[in-house]
Length: 353
Length: 237
Image (tube, rainbow over all chains, first blue to last red):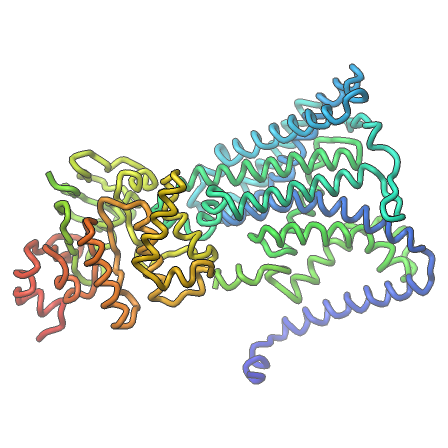
């Protein structure tokens, strides 16, 4: 047993482990140094964690779209970030109109529902037609071709929305009821962060139950495993693939509104970085695995928020927050070195083998 | 009028012709078997019937109605259901979920429940494992599940592709007994088998295929006596 294990190690593995090991060492060293220094108090850390959870749950929602599409088509839909952008960017105009007529302040709950509705329907429509126009004709083509097409579709959508709505940054109107803080268990939390986290959890629970419990959800899982056998059961495979894009689009549109609530602005390029982060989250969790994508998203959000101060501050690096993206992708490298299939990707690896 | 009629079908994989002028009829209540070696076109015939492969020429008729142009998932609703070669169960779904998928075209929940109970009656082993993930079942249990899944819609005709492949002899007997049982209960069966002796044992009629052409078509009795069949497909010298 040990002999076989020893034989299967290549020099590349050793180099990778050394890189991974030194990264880990730096992280541990940095963390210890930061904690010894004691620059941040407990309240700071709580703030970091809550912000990270809010950010992470947005990543998690977007990541489910990547992972589900990968499940049914074995492709990475790189235009998913633009699906995410299209919803809140369009809903901005509804929000601004409601702000002008004071509807937003008088009926904030209703107004928020309208914003969600507009954003989710736009994102869903874009996702649906994206699959129909850009990906369906390429079904059965070599895997690189849909990938390039996805990147092309991503640029197309970015510049379409730039053409439609202009290239400026639009400030989302402030919803007054969501300003300020709540005291929860003696911890002060910004109200909008609570709303973001709760809404995201609600949506993820809904999405996961849909996939696990409903007839269509089961059919989507069946199509992910074996398209031909699914067709022989009377499942409309194309229909299920469309449904997958629709669900992913809905989640992305909702995530987009939450993102706009947190950062209070929209922009035609706003989908790029969250899209890449969510893709990273999906890979971290084990691509194709829905709970994995959710977990990966929250993990990434937390690391990005806590990481810069925890890992880097103690090392004496100035302005550690500028390096939060570097930390996020370092985590990806680390997870892929030590667990190439992602956190929950074991079953997938077995299936592919 | 025959229940299923395959009428002068030609089919291709790319440029390679896989079926040359295949004509097969299956009457209601029969068991008909297709026998032949590897690459004879047995599985291709089934794939063409169930719509996974489009014939270039020829028609496929179910009770006189042309189903040649229907997409695969709609052919299922007409009552033609295939158990694919190699079982192809959904390994990450539970046994019950697999059966649910078999009944996907049926929207009546009560009927689905009844059909699940019927399948469990046919294969008690599946009932014991109903909540287990299907990928963890043994080969024989997976074959039972694949057949049970196909029976969920109560098909007019069941297409079975190599149901005995890779199974222990005891299980092969069990699977063939089940096929007989299903047929006694009124299901028409088109059976593709490498195991010609077993297949001719339960079938009413048989077709012998070789490189995409029908070589012989006769009653099972006559095929059993045929010297060429005995030599080529039953290993007699």
